[in-house]
Length: 468
Image (cartoon, rainbow, N blue to C red; front, side, top):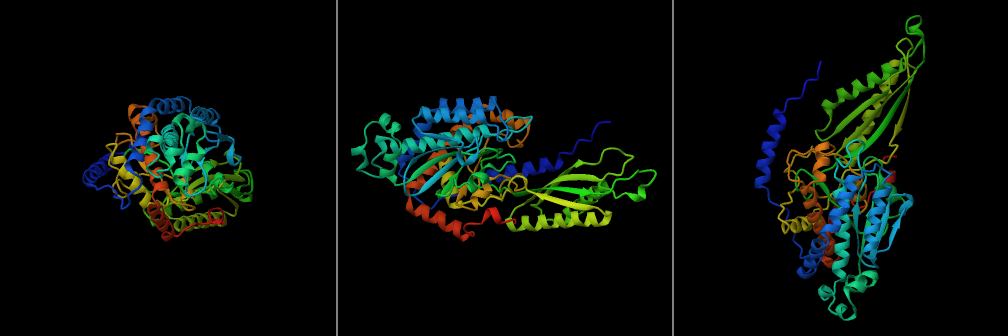
């Protein structure tokens, strides 16, 4: 007997409503000037001229997917490309073997461009991290190259062009000209293990982002969106300890840990009616006992708990914990709750001021980067970029692959990530990241407005201790 396939009527209705909303939506508008057009053009030109290098990186990663914390080949490939352009690269930063950092400049404002490169088990780059990585590398290199370019050197500092030599020599000494022209810094940080491993949180706790003022990255998706919500996520392993007994001869001498797991699962299912529509709880039973004729003395389940706000994530986690303890009381079992084997993920706190610069730069690439709420908010997941977004201003725009029906973490998305549409996302994304980065360095009023928005949203959160 085959499973009953879900009816697609609701999906079709959502798709039709979304298509109508997309057609009439207005993109985000920026009130800030950003960098001079000559400097933006220089950065865009760099991406165009080095298109083949960036696409080769994307294709290479796509063809050789590596899972979380095992991205050794991928990080080596990124380091090789960066060194080829004259940059010093540190691999193994923050105590993580597959993390990477490169940078130019000293002092002043500091932007970190982020690159992810881990893949999913079984389906490779079904989340498109090959695109994230290649676009991030391109964005970093283009931003650095633009401020080193003698043809653009007078844009921020008219005197700088008199002290620079050739573009080739600047590449071999990338730090000084940036400091002379902007007083700022650009870094690339390769962040492993986004898929559940919490690489960014580990790097943050190791101090990698301590002197960073803003972080920028992108994510491929079905649509172009300047700021799309991502949910916070915690995970909990619930282990029940019962008393073993012969299930036929003396069942009354047992305390059934499997019954406790089933009661907890059903209790969480009943709770779903009373959760906010943005929240999600989903789990699997990982241990249900060994033999039917022995009352299970151990049973376990693993749940993911997701919510749209840090506070509501705290509350939802408490409710799940109460259900687990209630199930233990009902069945006479002990219970052990193991929260967050890997770091919890916070929802993304988007910085709309900076995201508006991204949206404007995507328009020059022929893309309309939509505001939040046009594409349904529930079409989302979780990411460790959220953890950084409560430490400093951050953007995480979505870049479309040309198919409104694409779903993340599928074989179809993996195929799209290696297609011509994926290539276009790499190039357009690299331009967007580079130009947004240069804007931030060049425009003091923009930086102030970005920071003001961040502080108005609550400022820095003590992420490591938030759920303790």
